[in-house]
Image (cartoon, rainbow over all chains, first blue to last red):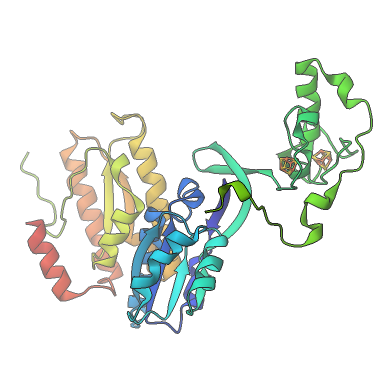
Length: 223
Length: 122
Ligand code: SF4
Ligand code: SF4
């Protein structure tokens, strides 16, 4: 999933400093699962903003709403009746950064991101998430025991480890596992160590960002 | 045990403090409570394994939010008290009341909302 975290409340308060009434919109997709922008987090941020502004003697009306998703136009369209003539100064989106862009595309009202969209990853345990993929557009992890050296090696090495790997940890931080150590262990476990012997060819990055923003078109799904 | 505790303390029953979430504490503050505390079982004695540890983490999260919005984090607190320890229950009620009195009334207190809330609680 897309993993995100809420911006500091101080930064958000500065964004809304001039507003009197805002629509705070959550998303029931990835950001609900990573506890950053679902109904629950909308409630918490809404309450925090109201408390802060009431304390300043300059109340802010925060209307809370959560959409099924903010990355599909049919759900973003559902905001139309709320935004028609209700005097909102801005929309605050608690979706990943796709959400505010979809809202901005559809409505002529200032839109602010409440989250920092951080990575594609998964939960290691309750309350802990880590990065697992960098969406390079041409997955090659089967060559590395199913582990991604692009997202999970600090230098994205195809032929690791580098000289900095020590005690299973990456030289960048003792907090980071050296993925190349894990790849080696995994290949030994699978009895496929020989597969690591040849030098892995230079990766074709044309599927990544080199052609600008990417798009997927599926004719079979069009209506 | 006919123990007295300050009458300003309003009790909200929950099946386990693990049920208490960040939003519950924030809503109390938002609607004008001068302080809120969670009285959970002693650590290691939760009937639902670790509800009181979860409550403690959530209280810490609320303290952080209060700090960020410019309120005193001391207005929320987590206490551990055994269900059979009446005297300690009364003691923490007094301790929290004194602490909140020292901080003064919440700047969010809205007399009308407050009255309605108290009425609903009774
Ligand atoms: S190889 Fe590319 S697509 Fe596969 S996990 Fe790594 S970054 Fe993601
Ligand atoms: S120590 Fe390991 S993870 Fe870190 S940069 Fe070197 S090979 Fe990559």
